[in-house]
Length: 334
Image 1 (cartoon, one colour):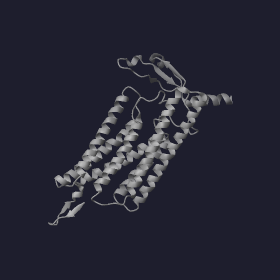
Image 2: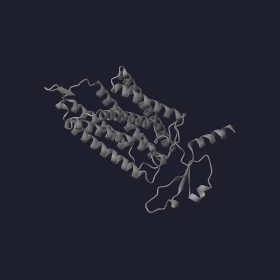
Image 3: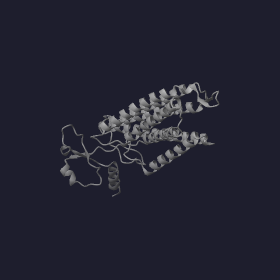
Image 4: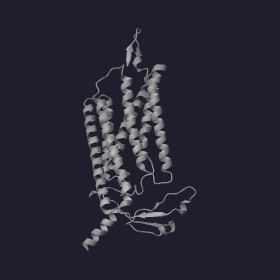
C-alpha cells in the first residue's frame, strides 16, 4: 500500500489512485438499487400481506452500500487529507463481513422456501440457519484477520453452505415437479400458474447460485497480488457480485404473482409437500366475528382497490392443509 519516499516517510502507491472514484461510483449504483428495491417492496406490500423474505433481502444491498461508501471515505481521506483512519477501515472490515453473512443467510432462507413453500421455517431449520450464519460470520472475521488455519475453515464453511443450499433447492424442485404432476393428472388448473411460477423461481435461483459458486471459487484461487492491477480485480469482483444480486433480486422482487401463489402451509410437512386444498369460503366481517373453527386458516382480506373502504372488503377463509389429512385418517380408523 505504501511506497518509501526520499524523506523516509510513507506514501500511498499511485496504483490505488482510482479507488476513491471507483468506490463512489459503485456505492452510488448499489444505493440506487437498494432504494428502488425498498420503495417497490413498500409500495407493493402497503395494501397486501407483507412478504418477510423481500424485506430480509432488502437488508443486503443496504449493507453493501454502507460498506462501499465507507471505503470511498477511507481512500478519499488517505489521498486528499493524508489521513488513513483506523476506525474507518474497521468499519469497512465489519460491514464487509456483515454483507457476506447477510447474503448467505438470505440464500439459505430462499433455498428453504421461506415465504414461497411455507409461511415459517421449522424450529430445526431456524436453528440450522442461525448456526451456519454465526459460524460463517466468525470464520470470515478470522480469515480477514489472517488468523492461521481460518482459510481452511472458511473453505469448509463455503462447501457446507453451498451443499445445503443446492440440496434444499433440489428438494423444492422435486416437490414442485410432483405437484405439477398431480395438477396435470387431477386437472387442478387453479393451482397450475402458482406452482409453475415457484418452479421457475427456484430454477433461476439455482442458476444464480451456480454462478456465485464459480465466482467465489475464481476469487479465492486468484493468486495475482499485483498492486498495479488491484483496481481492475476489484472492479471485476464487485461487478460480478452486483450482476448476480440484481438477477436474484429481480427474480424475487415484489410483484403481481400468480393467483393463489401465497396459498402455502404454515410449516413444511416432514412427510412431503402436497398441494394445499383449495376449499374457501367468503364472508363479510360481521359473519367472521362469530366464526370459530380450528380447521380453518385466519381470515385474509381480499385486495382493496383505491377508494374502497376496508370495511367493505370480503374475508377469505382457507382450510388448513393438515386438516383434510387428519379428517381422512380419523374416518379411515373409525
